[in-house]
Length: 175
Image (cartoon, rainbow, N blue to C red):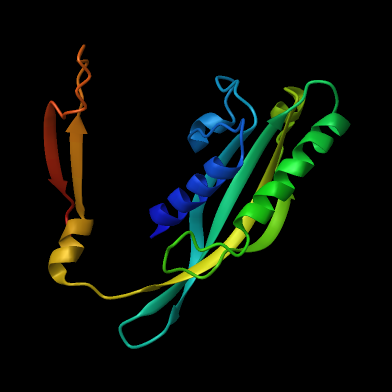
């Protein structure tokens, strides 16, 4: 469900915001990334509450991280980033993205700009949202599927046919 929540947020932001680039978290704060602003979405952290003897509700935090750049001044960076932050809050708050989750609730807003980022003319904000969903027991066969990783390899192909040239299946140890 975590990946589905992330995908729902990304799809909503892509549909509503223009001129925003998504990159992986490890590239977001690197010097290699020159396309700004950037939005990263991470589902992580949370607590569990027993709903029934076999069901649990996961209350999870979702973080939307916005990196914005303006080389002119810090004041100009703040003026530029605030409207984007407000738009993100309004686009996401109360949304379920067609999933069986509780609507997103904004919880916290933090300026997480590091010194090196500030020197590079960047400002970074993190918006924390909370949602929840019920985890329902599944069969042993479905659990084994969750422990299986499928890998497809796409070799350099001049035709670029989008067909896997090789594949592997790895089953994780269940002990």
